[in-house]
Image (cartoon, rainbow, N blue to C red):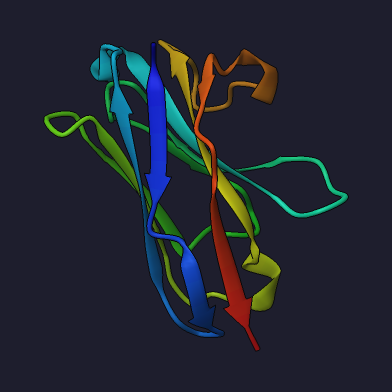
Amino acid sequence: QVQLVESGGGLVQAGGSLRLSCAASRLTFSTYTMAWFRQTPGKEREFVASILWSGDSTAYADSVKGRFTISRDNAKNTVYLQGNSLNPEDTAVYYCAADKYGSIWSKISQYDYWGQGTQVTVSS
């Protein structure tokens, strides 16, 4: 069974940084476009960033562009999300997702697998 396991969440002060990791198992990682989404209570899950299965292209939500960086290490079956200059509006549960040969602009419904999420809390 495919597993995506996020880690690296926690409490950080506004202006600080955090790096999230998502380790994938039981799938051919290099064939999956990977993405990060986030969700706060009462709101829909929203796109944060994605990286193409080949690693050639990335995409970001406007709200995080210039502050967050997505990357992947296919040798380690892991995707990362580096967040800098965090603000309280970044507080959410962050989820990673996998879409086989997907586009960097794939819709949320197109993602095949999801992790369980990791909480990020940014204090003001």
